Length: 363
Picture 1: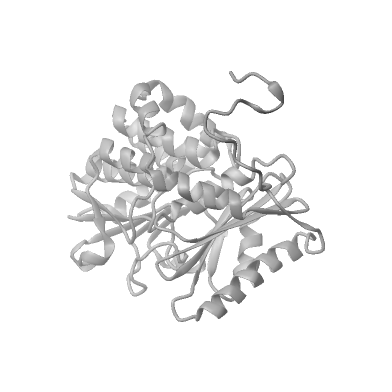
Picture 2: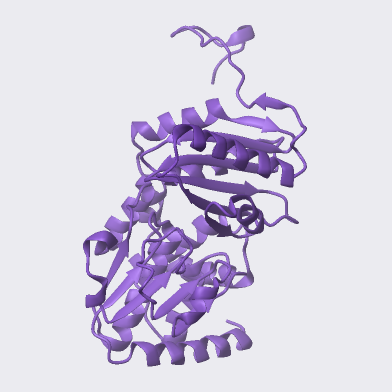
């Protein structure tokens, strides 16, 4: 770790120790549908607090862990994952948030509770500054990288399971260091990788998937439309909110598109994911402009998300909102007058057992 970053981490660690000193029970709150970065960062903060204070820690979210890979990670770490709606937060004398912040709309921390600790890598929200300790580094590709620096500075011996979780979190949020990455993320990954259980990491990343995963992918591809450099798809009502970002990532791989937007509905909210391969763009700033004043959103230069409450809207109003979001997205990117073309053209499905077209051989 460079000297200047080591010095900065040391100062922050000293302040964090002051906050946690003498506390008895830790609750780490993550976003409602936690991703690998949130899971790894939460596990790391729990370990850091245990190292200093011997304090038990719990992790809570307002929703659930959706993706099969992430559920496998939680199981591997043996995390005590609680439902935020079923616990009394006031019984914890130390409340922390990682990979999310108060008032962002993607977590269910009661608005009357100010967390003692906030550690995140998304742009800072004004309400976050009310927390006694906040370390928000929007240039970092992953919150796990920030927690790695804390663990290293504190002299914590990082276990194999924790190292595996942190590496998975960093790789996931940075697309294997391919987007929104800093030297700090690279340094963390290089230092942690020798400690990783490679076989377990592979099993987590290649966890078997349920049938509805492929059904949602099918819906996303069938509904996808391109307009100029943009590709857009709606999933309708879904039972796994993580799939919105998953489909957006897939759509961005279309060779003709540099922007992807995917939306869907879950739990009385319209959820939106935006991705871009334009290195000069800022997806986080764009999504904020798109959903204002309907909901909340934010993110990084290459990826962003948003949520809009729709529980009180009629079906007609929801349809109108969908059209507005898409039109605004296209207008801001200067693609509103481009023709709309289905991404996947309808073709006759070959009969079972039929050979490949044009006499070609299958391999």
